[in-house]
Amino acid sequence: MGTTSVRRGVLAAAAVSLCLMATACDSGSSGAGPAGGGGVRTEAAPGGAAKPAAALTRMLVAPADLPEYTVEEEFRKADPERKAETDKAVCEPLVRAQANMPVGAVGGTAAVAVLGKVAPPAADASEDEKLDALRQSAGRTGTTVFLDSYAGKGAEEAFAAVKKAVTACAGGYTAFGGPKSVKVEQVLPVTQDPAGDESLACRLVLGMGDGRKINMQFVFVRKGDVLATFEVLSVLGDAPQPPKAVVEAQSRKLG
Image (cartoon, rainbow, N blue to C red; front, side, top):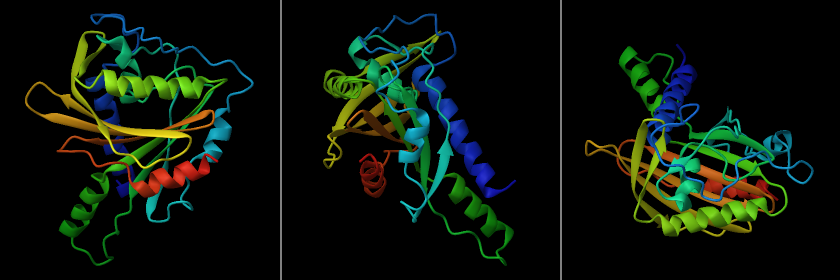
């Protein structure tokens, strides 16, 4: 199995595990948790003003924009039937971000994964050296970049909802889905350089019930009718911030 296949498998497994643990986003989600209305709309956005997915894809960072990184296509589906439930309605935008779900009513969505490059093993490398290189490649910290477009003032409303949640949910909240739940113990604001029309960053600390912590770092940048979300996940210790170069390159491409 090639390095790329292993890396994608590891990242996919991490994403699926996080989805199940952090948001319990099994299809249907009709069970144990309280509904989290939150005032965040999830129906399809009206057509016309919002950019379609094809236009957003052209706005995503590409290998030419980040030559020191590997940029790989990611797939994301804006499914209005998926639910994000929480014991604090105001925290719903953060629950949706945890589950890689758009915040509010989107007209289009697109995504890429950006990873630091790892030098391949030399042609005459030993088996141990090749395995070590494979582990380094599969275990790299990556940043996922999501672009969502909105009709009307939807992007401003989505950003405002996230900003409100970061402040109101500082003491934590519980996310539900079916019989599963997870406790977000803290929501911490993080210093973020200005980008786009408005931007903010935050860190979510998730308690896994056995003393372990999972950290998620987010940067949100709004430019016009597009909201960009940058996410980094770490299951070991603190999560690093999305690289400044990635945020800046993507922000420039938003226009």
